[in-house]
Image 1 (cartoon, one colour):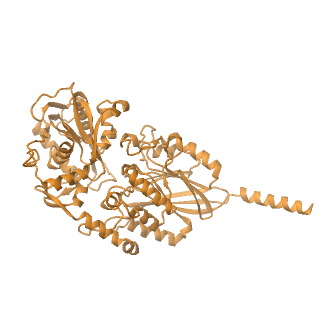
Image 2 (cartoon, one colour; image 1 turned 180 degrees about the horizontal axis):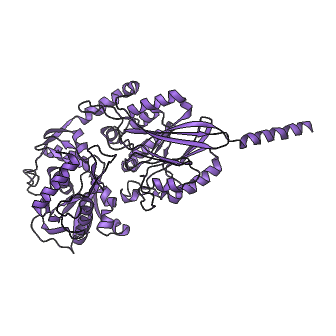
Image 3 (tube, one colour; image 1 turned 120 degrees about the horizontal axis):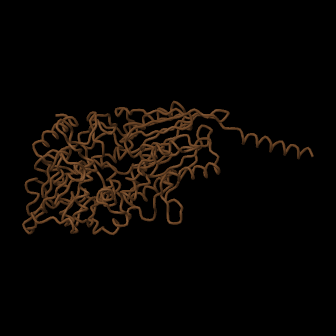
Length: 581
């Protein structure tokens, strides 16, 4: 009987201990949208830049101050694209362990979320990285990327023991993936909306795991919280999630912090410029305090040991990206794209049509305010000319759809002008993504598509729907609103990115799926091939035959804002406000 009483007493003690809330303080450090900013020095000129090496200095400092076992280090995605280093280990050195895997293992990351630009690298890259991270015990999280059987392609969560607390970290990628990327890139999965999916998964996993702290990390923009934007569901989650302590957001490159008594939201911005540091303290009664902050990273405070540990890889990348590839006769300034035709955009249009054979092309400036000087150019310059890994696609569009597409594009770019007003659709406001000043476009400039292969004008005095007037094809022949044309564009655009084909051209998803005519390699690779064949690019000779054995010509056509005198003056004033003299 005594033994039975002792046994029952022990069970009661254990039960009481199990029910008693654990207490402790955990420090959560987050990064997101680093986009290959791994090294603290540029490959050309040795200029010091924000990097993971500077972030590691801060992470080590916090770990030293509070204890490594009390710190959780997370990244919310877009790690594998955007810099020479990422490109080199994605597509050039494909045999060694991926450098990103080695870097985050060195820094002691606990979990990484899959971003849309990570998926954009393609199965060979992200599957290789997934295996590498898994080998080091670091999950690549994307619980809403579901296979046909309903299970997730990547892990959904991981449980950590930090500061005596059981911490549940759930990770999800962008739900709008199918709108940007060709299905071949993400074959074998589909992506579901984070609302209400995340709440359902939080409820199920919390019931099973019974964590003390719950964190949801998503590669999704902050958004407006109105539940209408699939691409940016951060505030939707912040406002509606129950039983979650911290929401980590990303994707839009805008630093952001929100908090209430029960939940916080953080977004560190992009390119290793900031980290977020959130302190969560759980008291003996289960109550908690949540204190988030955004810390600006001092790019000069880098970790010298980390720099030395990866010095060989830096040298390897620098040697590759400084190799000479050709020359250009005039400088390319990406900002000139906003004022009208320019060498930079003409060259992109030429590449798209020369390699695809398409009758018409659409293209937008993918660098906001960059310059490539005239003269010899190196591989590094190709990242300025074309920073993203977009493939080239050709789809069929009617003349009417082309006209409507352009109307939609220019409506994001300009507004109806009145004397004394602005042509650009811009506002006088601070924009955390840019450093050029307070004036910025109200819409992303990478969605400002112009066209080649046709002659057209854009009337700044007319309202939406009546601005674009297409006079003819580039060779002067008739442009027919009822005829179908082959149109070259990026894979991002061909998948519906920017809504040009949906809200502009008026296609449905089903219609778009049947319009694809051809798919070609990545546009940056095609630019490289161009220089390997022709050695140089000159705006005066782009439309001339490109070789002794080739008498074919790519006629780019012409476009301009009208009325010309008023447009030139007003746009010049807007350009000065946005970029300075």
